[in-house]
Length: 586
Image (cartoon, rainbow, N blue to C red; front, side, top):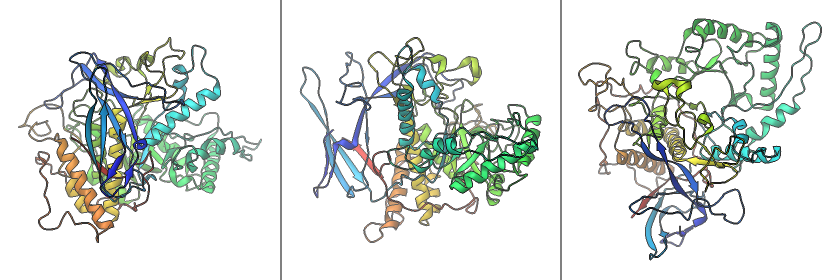
């Protein structure tokens, strides 16, 4: 890539571009359940993005390029351009040059339109993406495993890559011991080891941009997991001390505790009863815990005490999928939000088409992005994904479905992982990256880029709300999103069935990009009305994309449902958090 230059002489350096070769995976078995226009098929799919050069070694060590292309074959280069906050708005032009043995270089013009908007590095959205640092040692460091310091550095690179894509790790925790005297009273607690482990994630010193995690699971005192060796009163004392300490540190407002996972599935009535008991214990000596419990499941009145975040999987919203048993939806969650509670969503192996998800074997590349549009539209404030490195059979570049764990019906290609290990020299018998790929850190995925774009769009929508253009943004997003999905029985005449003529979300990528541009132009106008036109003004371009097909469900949300956003236009845009722009390749 060349530098990008504007007609006024402004420059965006080529150093802001990151080049990757898309690696194609051989997917032998399609993810289950396909409906017309959302088919999943076996075949080759691009997902791992192999960097041209090793980002963790000096000297521009080549990894992803140069590369061979078989006669009649195909190779794809993916380019990220990070727009610095200092970039002057306007149109920039540059050149991507492709060279090949025995061929003249091919120069490809690239135009970059930079809008006068900064997407803040600081997140206003809660994100929870599960990461297990223990798996890295099985794929990095040689047959005997790397030294502890090396593994710590490698894990830090995974955390940084996650952070650059606007995803926070689900859990931020550290060691702490609670002891009691002979009378059962809590003795003074030594918080030094806990604080040392947690502080870098929260104060931002863990990350290159200095921005800490927005929300985090504290991983202690999780309702539904039992009391361990403590009595009820000891557990209640320790929980109160824990909350009070985090409150004193200024961390409590960002924290929550992840209750037992999917209680509706992992125990049902008995687990709900246990959660209610333990939530009551949390409140015995302090009211700080009120509203600090997250539940991965739909609203349930049995555990309202203490729950502050309801986090259903997207098919467990309304009766769009479980049409024989209505789940809580827009009306119910509007009531919960009016009480100060939050709505989050997650995706997992339940996301069968036409529900958008994170499948590798989708032909609709922006599925991970449109999910975030729907999450904002439903007035949620956060998003969860259970794991980014759940590497199946310890062979993540070849095996993508965990059938033993999730069954033939439930196992989806790519469920539970977004990273690929960058090396094949670990303790798992050499399993890992292809032979030509050897870096001491993660290989990111195309899906991660789409998720990041979705979170950036979400921040843009929140900026529109904060500037008074929430209704405009909602009307625009409503052109592309109607609801998360439908039941997968195909019948256009039966209520609750999928009908190709009534898409739950748009299959027209040009409409997606058009909607984003219109909202961005509205935000730009509201920030700088003296320099830009209002896209709502009479005669403004109405757009040409094809709106999502509509049916009986219009996808509208009452204007007063839920709270209002408090995001403010902030400055940012350093590599890792990019300014708003469009890119065209001619």
